[in-house]
Amino acid sequence: MGKAHEIEYKIYGDDMQFVEVELDPAESVIAEAGALMFMEPGIQMETIFGDGSGQGENRGLTGKLFGAGKRLLTGESLFMTLFTNCGAGKAHASFAAPYPGKIIPVDLTAYHGKVICQKDAFLCAAKGVAIGIEFNKRLGTGFFGGEGFIMQKLEGDGLAFLHAGGTIVERELRPGETLRVDTGCLVGMTGSVCYDIQFVGGIKTAFFGGEGLFFATVSGPGKVWLQSLPFSRLADRIIASAPRLGGAQKGEGSILGGLGNLLDGDR
Image 1 (cartoon, one colour):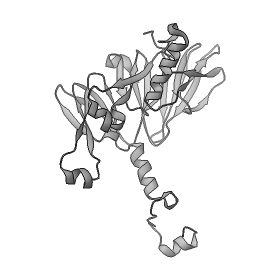
Image 2 (image 1 turned 90 degrees about the vertical axis):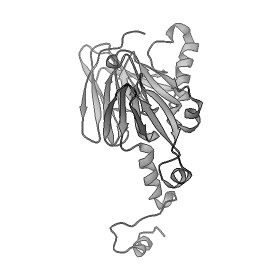
Image 3 (image 1 turned 60 degrees about the horizontal axis):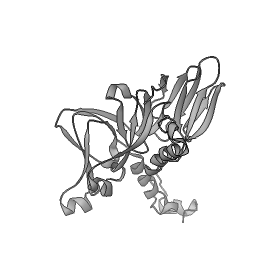
Image 4 (image 1 turned 45 degrees about the vertical axis):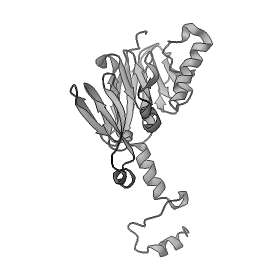
């Protein structure tokens, strides 16, 4: 695997963050389609198949299609966007998170060149970072884990940026130490962490506990990144509170209650 471009960055904001990447001449960064916030003159953007890491370049069209197909399996777009500084001096490009949360910078060299993350956690990375798929060997994880069976793996020796919702927790697991996590709250982990899906237990707990039928178990050694507010959980609450989407309006803070709904046209 070729050496990734060495980029510099700065993260702005608190709960609505964006990352500004500094590119020297001829340096590039790859990003998910739609992640761009702004870029300076001299930077050119190009839509590419796959991740642009160059792993399939020697295999021609077949190699490029294979790289794009790996992304399709994770539920992502076939295409990514490549931003290259074609000018004579330094230039900057900024990429914004898609919903409230934090951006996590990950130096892959610090984690033996590999980090595994949820399929929608990747935001951008230095060119040369390979974005593939990570299959869990346990079949049950595939059927019940959602994101667990087919997760993204980031490989290389460059910088990558993940995004997660709410507050981010980093846990360093000792050898044999295990943590049980809601499947949506697991953002990523280093390659040395073992990951599986387990049934929650009793029938009453499973159906009436409100936490789903399964949870993830992660075992050390290694580091895991957790998020307090998965986007799926946020979206479910919004839909549940939106009358036009099938939810029930709560009317918090309204002194008119149901009459107010009649007046504003909701009923």
